[in-house]
Structure formats: structure tokens, C-alpha cells
Length: 106
Image 1: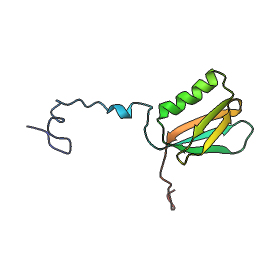
Image 2: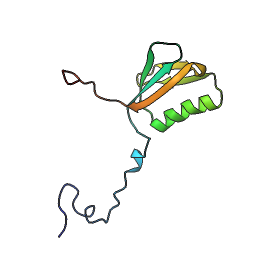
Image 3: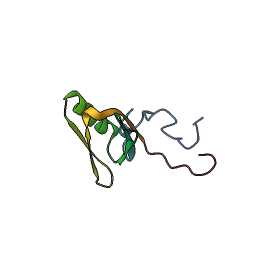
Image 4: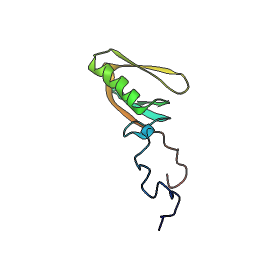
């Protein structure tokens, strides 16, 4: 008996690989994402929304730190450029954009 459902046919019969598509490799989200940057001795965070791959952003920041570059330059979706002194970085959080929740359940 052939399995039925939304993924029936060749996929359900095991003729097509069930591996994730290449664009969704682990840790390499594509599309809008939010970057939160904490600065040493500063009470506020810097938050950017960018349209870059997670790996590209991570590599840009890691390379700047490892090579001792004095500044990191990032550009958000609106075209604004933020220049951050590498020595002032406390942490960088790279994550997917989440929809803003509204109401009592937020």
C-alpha cells in the first residue's frame, strides 16, 4: 500500500532524499534576521535588521576580532551603516526576526 498524505508519491516511497534543502544548512539562515550587539560599559544594545546570511555576518565579525581590525562595519536593510569599535564589543547575538507579539499573551 502506498502511503498517502501531503508528501505522498515518490517522496513517501523513499525514492527522493529527505535531506534538508541546501539553503537551510545548519546555522546559515537566509533572509531577514536581527543582530543584537552589546557594548562594554554601555547600558543599551545596538539592534540591526539585515538581509544577509547568518554565516556571512558571523564570519565578518569573527574575522575582524581575530585579525585585530579596529572597526566592524555592518549595513542594515534600510541602508544605514553602523561602525562598531571591535574592542568595545561585549557580545553579538544573531537570530531570526520574530513577529512582534501583541496582547495579553505576549
